[in-house]
Image (tube, rainbow, N blue to C red):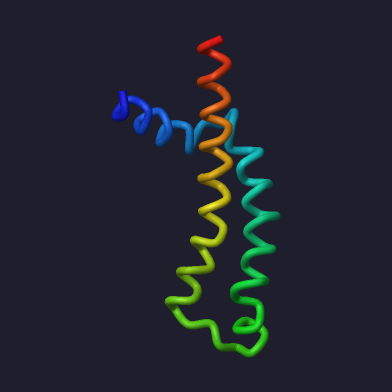
Length: 80
């Protein structure tokens, strides 16, 4: 059961029915988090390679969380 869930989740990461909303959420939430966590470093010109990697993850996390929420809701609707 767990393996099926994980495979379904990874498939959902690129599901066109879910990606639009997830991208919008990632842009808005990711930008807020980027500003909080990296804004000063960006303004001061102190963005390192590691910090840029972290900045990319700042956008990936809300995307993944949103896809997870959509995937769970889709599963609940199917179960009902």
